[in-house]
Length: 271
Image (cartoon, rainbow, N blue to C red; front, side, top):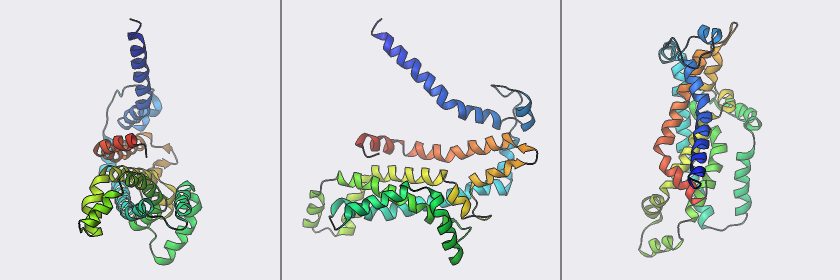
């Protein structure tokens, strides 16, 4: 009995933790299935009169569902660009030593430490001068300022875990660098690539200030569209909750598909 008590206590603690973790999501789901009048009039843990009107409005109103399309477009573009740029950079930091390499590596990380508000105005002025305001590529390139350093840092750790002798053996066997890099080296760090893509997606998906500053109508993200629920009569809580639930779905799907890579990344100690 004495040995079983810590197990039961740990199980109870884990259950309580999971309940507290899922409570905000459940409450948002609860609100999304109720009308705004019902939410403001009564307090209910379980929806008494279910309605899908909030979700129907999002799926049928172009100004709403276009926000999700815009967000997915520029986040996907940023993820591809960040990983593609970070791969050769991380390989250089991992395999070569050059003047100021450690200082340059630290400088890259300082870009990730800086708040987005510092760069919002320079990006706005730059993109206004070249006609990139309110485009998906504008937001995707702006987010590279934060995601590329993060991607380089993560990938460099995975690449450093691959023995340098592999590079030498490939050269001795007559393999060119492109063939070695794409067909021999990258498959060995596919876990790192998956982890990097996940974090790039996550940081780009939740970033609001830069995305809102650089877009107006055509490329406005869903986070900016959600502010439309504010009116003279107050917030439309049901519609806002439904939009929040749908915002969680893409991130949850990405986590599901790369969960094994994330677990391996944590196990390797770089993430």
